Length: 229
Image 1 (cartoon, rainbow, N blue to C red):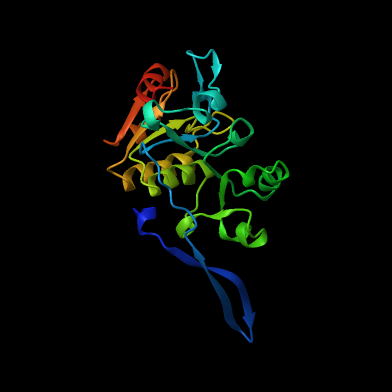
Image 2 (image 1 turned 30 degrees about the vertical axis):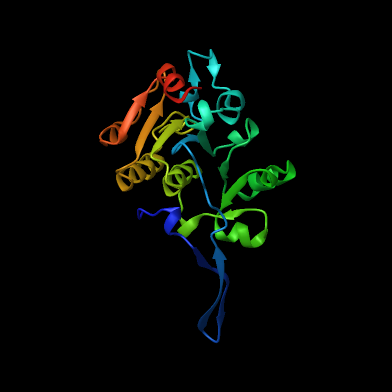
């Protein structure tokens, strides 16, 4: 995973067709411009998954994303405002600034609710080609679990403080999610000048993540105070 930033990104070619003709591979490519200029103010972002760490003692249940994140003003002139990078169905709870989804059925659900009309929804090249004009291409074809790509995109956009909400290292069966653990850890290792905060009252971050010097833990009280939630 390379350390790359949007300020250096003009766009890229994507393969639109891939055929074998007379035993030879023929490809057609199309240039996709960078359509986004992210002029964030605070340099802070919230990456939102659906893990158990979103349950907390301060709110006596799951963090209300709409009131605490979507409608977050960020103090005077938005100097502490959080841009939101959502994944794992959190679109049903709030209007994110950016949302990442690769599953075709879930994209169909988003589209049925016209969610992509007011939120920048990222997906991979095939979904963008199959449904032109609806979704945005994940730069450089970066792959991984949706919440991993959300974390990478927050780094790619130049945020220097990233708060992980519900980004847990467990599967739905409460088993270690080894793929996610390694993918997220690679983001930490790649973006060494970015500070990552795992926000949780009870759940602990995975030991692999905690070994990174740019990784910290915050409870919800600290998060609320620090980000003026």
